[in-house]
Structures are given as structure tokens and as C-alpha cells.
Length: 258
Image (cartoon, rainbow, N blue to C red; front, top):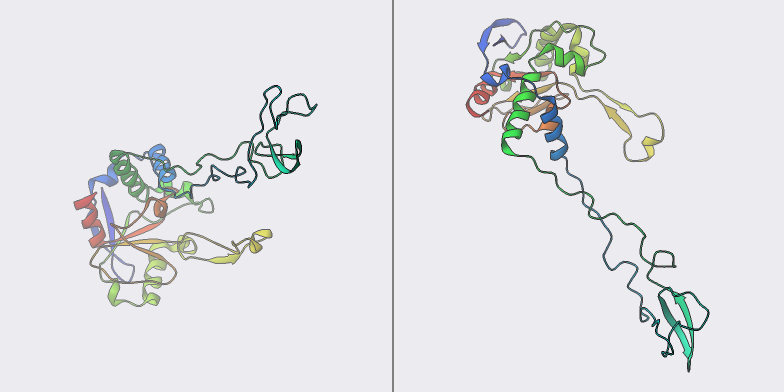
């Protein structure tokens, strides 16, 4: 498989051989599995002693003819705590069980948020599949519902000289490369409609273009996600088929490490 190499003006410069991982089968099931396993969920569950921390003594005896017992008093045998006493007369209130005031919860969550595991071979297959999907027009068209037809030949590789170029020039080059699809590659943010504005999610934004660079390259571009090819996570590439631009050095490093 070969990718198109573009210069810094967006003109075709030639073709470049792609690493073998771009020819592999895209395993959507394993990518989805890894995406779920890679999510961080804050574990939560109640304190084991919750509802049992009252200062009064706990349960009351159910034996016959026993002092301070429930038996023979015509009252239910729920656990109780003594609030006051006058000799053998007690004032009790229900305690500890779920149906009583201040008692434990009936069915509390039990350690929700347990870490999911996935083996190393599946992680490698997931990453290879995610990279391969960036070089497949069918996956790109599936991801972007507003994209009628994608005419750009993928994968897109650009010269490793972006450090020397201004953001304005990069935008012009990308406009030349992507043509009608250019409106999808720039990050746009808008105010969310509805109550979400008051709940910590005021803005909605699209993913935009992902630019993968080599470890020795040092540049930032406003309006795009720029990641080192060795630091990219599965969430950067999922759902499959994200519009992605690789630098020459990134392709070389992918061939060596992936």
C-alpha cells in the first residue's frame, strides 16, 4: 500500500510506501473492546459501616423471659436501639435495617467501576485496526454522516517541515488537500441547546483533524489535535475512520514500532 506525499503547499510530491499495519483487517469488535477497557471509571460504593454507626447499642434479644428483650411485648422484632430507660421500661427506635430511619441502604452499589482488562495482543490489533481505518475511505465515510463522497486519497502524508510553517500556511495546504471536506477538519465549538448548559457541558465541538507527528518534531497548530505517534490513545482514533494526517517521520516510526 502507498500513501500520497504532499508538500507544504498542498501539492502532490510523490508516493511513499506504508507500513504493513495499514494493510491489515480492521477488527471493529476488538477496537470497541479496547475502547471500553481504556475508559477510566471512578469506582464507587458506600462505606461498609454506613447505617450502623449509631451511638446506642445495637440489636435487642429475642429470647423468652430475657431482660431487655422483645419477646412477649407485642412489638415487631426489628433491630432497635435504646434511646432512654426507666428501670425495665425502654424507649426504642428501629435501627440498622433498610426500612428504618438512618439505617443502611437496601441494595447499595458494590464496587461499581471495576477496571476492565485486555491482553497485549488485542491492544496491538486494536491500534493497528484504528490506524488502518484512517487509510480506508469506506470507514471515513461511515464515521462522517455529513460526508456524501470523500475524494481525497488516503492516507495523507505531509512533509516533516511543519515546524517552519505558520498556521495560516498549513490551513491553506490542508484546504488544497481536502477540498470540499475541509469544513470537517477544523475544530468548531458551539453553545449546546437545552439544560446541559447549566450542567457543566455548555459547549459542543467536533473532533476535527488529527495530525500525527514523530517524537523529534515539535510544533503546535491551533484548531487541530496534534499528537506524537507514540502517545496517541485509542480514544483519539475512535470511532473508526477519523480524518488523519501523518508526517513522514510519523510513518517511519509506525513502521518501526507498530
